[in-house]
Image (cartoon, rainbow, N blue to C red; front, side, top):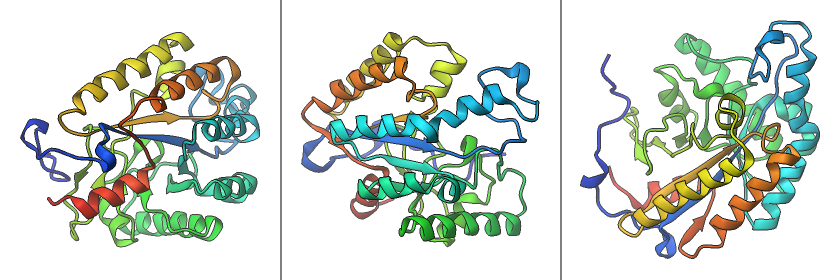
Length: 289
C-alpha cells in the first residue's frame, strides 16, 4: 500500500522555516504520563515475568512514575522554565488527579495519549475507534478543563482512520509520524491536521531500556543531536523533541544527565523553548500547504 496519509516533501525544496524571534531550533519536551493495567503485559524491564499476574517487577518499575518520578521531573522542568507537553492517558485523570492539579498550576499542555498504555486502538473498526477516541478526549477535557489539541497513540499506534477521526473531534495535530525535523500537513478530509515532530530515538525507553545506554552517553547524544540541528537551523528552522517517561529518566541516577542536557540546550540563544501546542498553532497560522 502506498502512503497516502501525507505527501513526500524533500526538505531541500521547502521554503525557509523562520521561527519566532529568529530561533534556529524549536525545542519541546514530550512527557509521557501513563497508566498501566495490573493484569496485562506492557513495557517491561524484564521479559521473564511480564506475563505473570500480578507482575510486581515490571508493574512496580512503571508505577514509580506517578508515585515519584513525575514529581522529580516536574521540579527539573520548573528549574529551566520548560513547560511540559504531556502525552496523557485519560485513565491518569481518574487514578492520579494530583498530577493534573499540579500540571494545571504550571499551565502544562495536555495531549491525548489513549485510555492507558495497556490498550492499543490498532485494528479497531471506524465506529469502535471513534467511540474510543471520543471517550478519551472527553475525559481529558473534563479533568483538565481544556480540549486537547494533539495526539500521540500508545506505542505510537494508529489505524488508517485515526487522523480523520481526530480532525472530526477538533484536534489539530498528531505526533505519531516521526519522519521529519519540521511539521507538515496530513492529507485529512478537512486538510487541517498536521504532524509535529516527536521522537522514537531521542526517547528514554529505547535508549536506556532497550539499548542499555549510560547516563553520560545519553547526555552526549542529546548534545550532539542539538548541535547538528542548531547548525542546520541557521538555514531553515528545525524541531527537537525529547520524549521522556518518569519511570526511566525520573530515576535519580539518570535524572542528573537529563538536567545537564536541559541546561546545555536552554543556555543557547535562538532556541524557542516551546510546547507542542504552541508550535502547532504557529505552524497552522503561518504556513500553507
